[in-house]
Image (cartoon, rainbow, N blue to C red; front, top):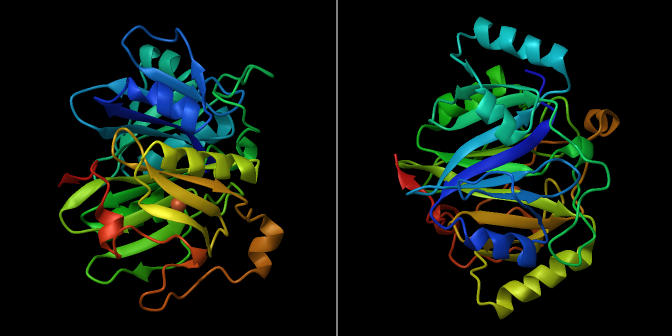
Length: 312
Ligand SMILES: [Fe+2]
């Protein structure tokens, strides 16, 4: 499956209304008005129709992750790949296509129970993006909207599904003391350093964080300062990762999972991939950052903290 990047994410959450303020004032996302009348909040990061949808519901969960394919040819090829791998799929309904504003999509469920959508052709309106606050915009384009980190109780099958069927090459396994594995994956057909992270923790499943990347470092500083003024929980403070070299901090969203709010991530273009050592070995107690990223609890406590995690 030739996935180019993360196209959109959809969450279900009781805290849908709080996202209007959190998304626009803190994160600088643009609010899309009048798209549906069921109370869903749609947030924009660029000229795409939207990148975030928060749908009202009793509990918080990832409703779907939308993975982008280049065109109809790659979409048809993806369906052949799913058939060959005996992965059951269903076509998105007309209502779902209109909601996501995409040409075509198929829906699949991974071994941990998360729903994914493979799509192409999301609507774009040239020069229509207006950020929610004074903001210099987000790094999207050929890198997609960012990255998604999922937590699952059964790591191996989950991991194999994404590597073998979905086409997400891995940077190698990192063991977390007292927990399962942790791997970072790039799209084989996209330049973002990693688009997917998989964490294995016994007994829980959920979303750890979604990373979005800013064009301007000051937008990270501004949000970091505002988050503290508003008394928001920063589970992982400002720092710079090794790996993707992202300078970022993590903030708890109104729905309980985290957003990594970043700047300066490394692209992995083909040339770079051929000439770069991508496997990194982490020593015990190494947080995987050049500096900072101080956690408000030790590992793995910090990793299991999002309240959106549910018993599996
Ligand atoms: Fe991240």
